[in-house]
Length: 112
Length: 113
Image 1: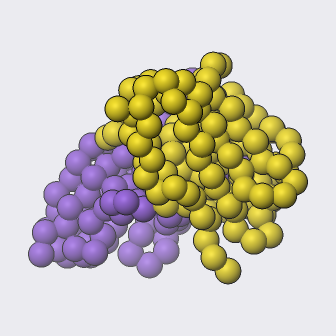
Image 2: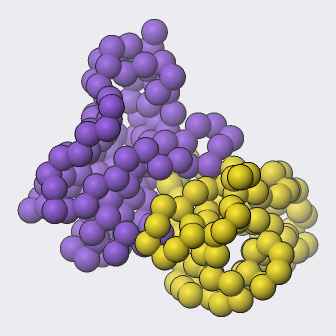
């Protein structure tokens, strides 16, 4: 009930391409869905977040798409750059709280 | 305004020893969260504290683990009688309020030998 499943585990994209990472959740009480970016040796940093009252949110090259009926959400990174190479985590919580349930992570490599 | 400070960054303990991990939240932040990240896995919530109070410890193992956030000083995550399976990265995050953005520290990487 508390799980968030993330795919793929790893992703290789050419520079300029689109990176797509998908997550699915089970707990319908979740109402806050953030994405985090983590570089090696660093802590996760909030990238972008969405609430279920909207189906899409865009910030620069990063877009979250949200499908409430399917209980799925995804991160799209447009015009992917080598500097985007990192591990990305989706997460979910209730009431926008910080007791987050994280997905397993996606290791993204953007090739020059 | 310094970020969330965790120390030590790396900690090596022998099996059976105690590990103490410290977290100094950002200035003005009174909410602290501890997470554990096993190798090649996502972060798992452990405990949520507010000054002098444990708000939610549903992710804490029932034995050997404890956490505190005193009125003065950093938050402490304490692991007694460590075992190899405790080897992980432990992250602390802090926020100014319950439903405001939390910022993560760089983590403490615990290795049990």
